[in-house]
Picture (cartoon, rainbow, N blue to C red):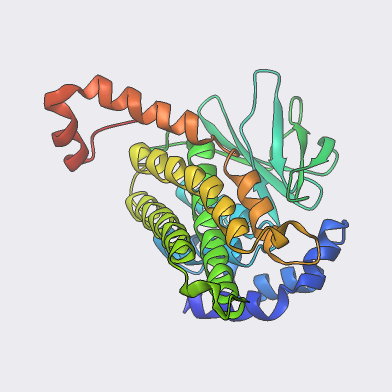
Length: 330
């Protein structure tokens, strides 16, 4: 049900014209209203906390679709915020929201969508804190995809609500951010794959579609491998984290997705003969997001390092048993 709803909604409303306007700074109010009217931002929050009762695993299809359609709104972030609030025993919220990690000076850097988010979620000294963003945004910028990013200072501000982390780790914001980015990357890669296949079947060279040439078929097969692997590891991370945080699954998902983002974008542009770099072609909307998302909430090197450390600490005899029983922690 979630997948049918989100695919229909984003497929109808996220047009090239909407993306161009969003990159120019226009907030897509009609799109956001449609998302909230369908209850999609509350998908992973429990019913007793104002949500619709879906699981975190259910939310995977929504976040992946947001990446597939390059939705220019903080849908993934808001779903994540409401999921975390419910996990901490707090009520879900309405309106766009965001999340970020805080430094020792009480500042959150590179926060997604700070200009449009009404609330920001973070962790301070073992507590989950929710703030209203009004008056707290102290710096704004854009990532490569021209999505808003910024700096929020919470030092001295009073949170709207707070709750102990309970069974959640102190780095839950980083972990959740890595999960949603891995799913968005998986969705964007699937769109690149579909675009490359369509182009290869339509573009004729030397009397036949270029998709009939073995070299092109090989490149598209590699792109399909990256897309499927990113999707599988991302979904596995969402499924594993329904009950308790599984850091190793998240580390694997984000590391794989970040690697696939770079490789997949390169292959797609090669298959299209680099025409996707032009602003007139829609391919760049996906690839610029891939280049941005792969480094947000920890890039490939960071998460691969976490995996390597976990493997080394487990040792030759301990790694496989710990991996199987879920006790290994990256």
